[in-house]
Amino acid sequence: MAKKKLATVWLGGCSGCHMSLLDIDERILDVAKLADIVKCPVVDGKEFPDVDIALVEGSVTSDEHMREIKHIRKHSKILIALGDCAVMTNVTGMRNYFNLADVINASYLTAVSNDGEGEMPDNPQLLKLIDKVLPLQEVVRVDFVLPGCPPDADTIFYVLSEFLQDRVPNLAEAKKLKYG
Ligand code: SF4
Image (cartoon, rainbow, N blue to C red; front, side):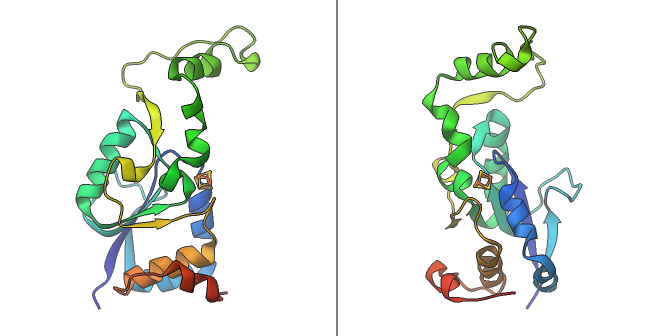
């Protein structure tokens, strides 16, 4: 079986899902036998290449994320929403209960920690937050959802292993398996 190309991406999330991915520990060597990791937060590649599988953590929060996830969708055969922020916005979506301008003002100007000296960043090159945080499936087609905050390492390893061997994972099965 030819080696697959794997990418992991971090959009609007806390990186906890990637930490959980790293918790597969030495099983990363099993993954490496089946796939080349061609893009991830610690691989310094500027471009997102064509991949077989993209694991995407976090939700869509800005114009930049919007462009990124559409590009990822176009270049990925299988797109997996990794964790609750990607699946349903979760913690990242907590700002959806408020008006965006109020959230930005509270963050940069009126927060107590600013001591009244806050400043609104206005560099035109900065990304622009969208009004409401969106889960991936409201922007692009998602092939598989892997819920959890974060999903546990055993489940991530199971799902990844199945897709890397051309099988469709069954999360009910994952619960019965023991790894490690
Ligand atoms: S699902 Fe939980 S662990 Fe994953 S990015 Fe969101 S807040 Fe962090």
